Each structure stands twice: as structure tokens, then as C-alpha cells.
Length: 181
Image 1 (cartoon, one colour):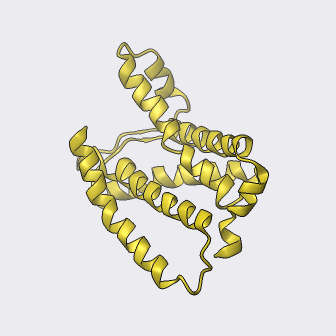
Image 2: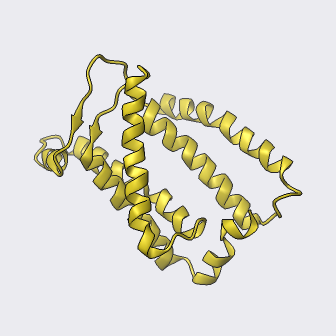
Image 3: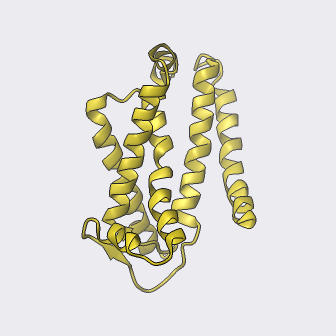
């Protein structure tokens, strides 16, 4: 586990350095706002980690594609699984990995409540579609699963509503990235 964390850091470091360089170059164009800059920086770090975890970590090049188009098939399979640690890792992991997307949707992008489901489903479908593209390019294979879309969508929506409930409106308004970008 420690080795994978080290690999993640080395993968994310150039992305973070590039973000910092671009931000410094744009300091006169985009007004400095500490809250917005920390939100952007956190989001870039999160996206680098998400990219690594979803598309690189554990992806092995193989000659076949695993997929599931039947809703709840994998979820029910995990619930009936005799090894609870694997079930918890996959079910909770698929929800937890997208909670930050929902948090940023509420705090950074201020996506309206009526659009959050479209945002959540769209990002989840994008993740699964990108896994298919990586498979087609021979860069590794992950299972393409409709249940991952459902769990990722739930995680994004949970993060969104957690931010709406936990963060006062005045702070959410000050954190609007679009107003200072």
C-alpha cells in the first residue's frame, strides 16, 4: 500500500507543479482569491489522484474486456460475497472516490440542484467510457460496470448535498470559481 501511495505522489507531482506554474503565470489575469485558489489546487490534486486510481492503479493489459450492463448485478454479488473486506472496498470505494466531485460541484462550480444528477451521471459515464478507451489503446483493462456508474453517481450526489448542508451559503458564494476566473 505504501508503494502505491508513493507511485501516486510521483504521478501527481508533475501535474501539481504544472498547475502552480500556470497559476503563477496567470496571477495578473485571474484575480487572486485565496479560497478559490485553494479550491482549484485541491481539485487539481484530486483529479490527479482520481486519474491514477481509476485508470492506472491495478490496470493490466489483457486480451479480453470484462463488462456488466445489468444494474445491481455486481452490487448484489458483493453483498452475497463471503469476503466482506472485498465487498466493502469495492462498494464504499466507488462511492467515496466521487464524493469530492460533488463537493466541488457545490463549492466551486455552483452547479444548480436540478443539474447535479446530469453532472453526476455524466462524470460517472465518462469514467467508465475512458476505461474502455484505455482498453482499446492497450493501456490496461478495468471492468466496465453499470454498477460503478450507479455507485459513482451516488457518491457525487452525496458530496454535493454534504457541501450544501455543511457549508454556509455565504461561504459557498465566496468560493464561486466562475466569478473570479
